[in-house]
Image 1 (tube, rainbow, N blue to C red):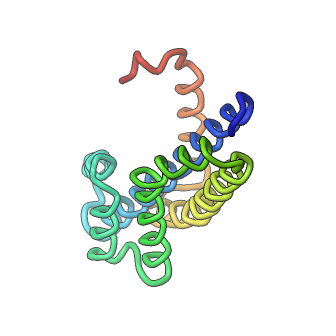
Image 2 (image 1 turned 180 degrees about the horizontal axis):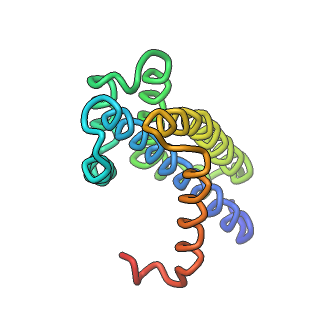
Image 3 (image 1 turned 60 degrees about the horizontal axis):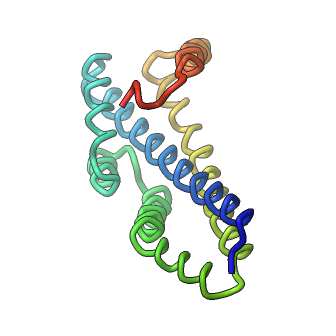
Length: 168
C-alpha cells in the first residue's frame, strides 16, 4: 500500500512525465511550423499563425502534417509515433492501472521509478529535437543571438507570472 510520502513522489513523477510529454510535442510543432516557413511562406505573421494553430491540433495530426510536408522523416517519425502511442497509453489506460497497482500491491517505488524513466526518455527526445529547431531557425535567417534574446524575453515574461488563472 502507498504511504503519504510516496503519494507526493508519485504526483511529482506523473506531473514531470506529463510536462516532458507536452514539451516534446511543442518542440515537434515548432519543427513542423519552421519547416513550412522555410519551404513556403517566409512571412513571420504566417509562421505565428501556423504555429499557434498547430499547438491546438492533436499530436497525431501534427505528425501526419510533418510527414506529408517532409519536416519529419525516417527514424524520427518512427520514434515519435512510438512516443505518441506511449503518451496516449499513459493518459488513457495507464492511470487506472497505476491506481490499481498502488492500492493493491507493494509497488509504489516501482511505479514512481517507471514514471521517472518515462520523463527522462521524453526529455532526452526533446533535447535531441531541439537541436533541429535551432538548425531550422538559423536557416530562416535567425541567429544564435536571436535565440538568446528571445529566450531571455520569455524567461523575463514568465518570471512575472504569479498566478496561472490570470492567463487561462
